[in-house]
Length: 353
Ligand code: NAD
Ligand code: GLY
Image (cartoon, rainbow, N blue to C red; front, side, top):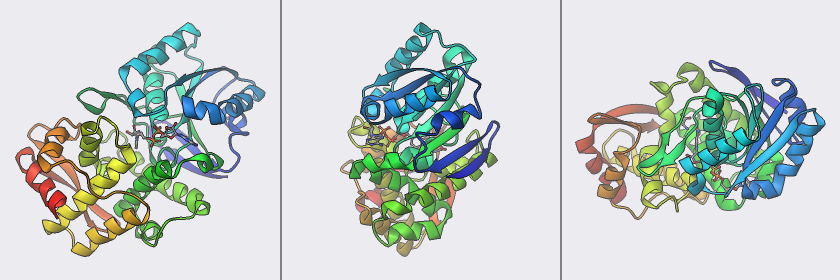
């Protein structure tokens, strides 16, 4: 097991390793006194891992209950959040109890939100079971649900008490879902780490490399979150590919997964940045190659007009401007404020290139 410490407002450990489900209860006891824990998961992960997690928690002295919602982004909404809150209330969960997110980014984001608002805040633990949740969403304390107007438009910042990432759970991920996590890991490479990036550039990564990739991504994300927990500056870099990506998710009625949409968004932004002279053609080509080599898409069927219209409901809009993340070279990106009137023509350089 390796452990990365995140020194955010609430400091916590991210434990990464094989076989950690069996140790989840013991690890949780280092941050929680014996109490009730409600495990929140989705129906797919429920079938695969819920019983083992419940056993581990019970063996460590916790009293356990669970709630499962239908798997998929379509569940990440106010109705599911409300159902979870009603369930916690019916079960008499108190402020000295806790909840645990077992699953991918959807389970993590919605459980974190529930933890932030139930009884004005209770503790929660993240147990990511997708690569995307392991490398990105389980760390940093952003929680959310989608609204009809757009992606992640309601949420709170709340750091978990601990993250337990059992890398064995990644073995059951379908290839497409694994690739979603690779997209976020490639993003981390483009932002901060050419050596990490080159793993993906050189072809499909082997499953044995995943623990290393997770540790490296969590370390980078932790550093950014420590510097800017509430997303006022540097943390916005983590949105590389996301302004366009969120627009694609919304326009597809969440038929395109988050990871695939981010890959498409990175491809479009990379080409637009090269066409605008913000980075060399070689940088854009390298980003495309890394994505394509890992079975990820680099373009979408939506027009620049559709994408920019949908993007303007994004949180990243501030009045008449929107912050975009621009790759300058592999391992270095910058935030660029552009006027909303210029968004469509900028995106067009990436959709038509
Ligand atoms: P997801 O949670 O929907 O999981 C994808 C699919 O994989 C689901 O069908 C799930 O049931 C299944 N699954 C999960 N674990 C499995 C396993 N071990 N074996 C087999 N199947 C498994 O999606 P995701 O890609 O994990 O996360 C995407 C979400 O994360 C989006 O809503 C996105 O907005 C959010 N996100 C949040 C942050 C953040 O900082 N909070 C960062 C990035 C993404
Ligand atoms: N995934 C973006 C962030 O955590 O800020």
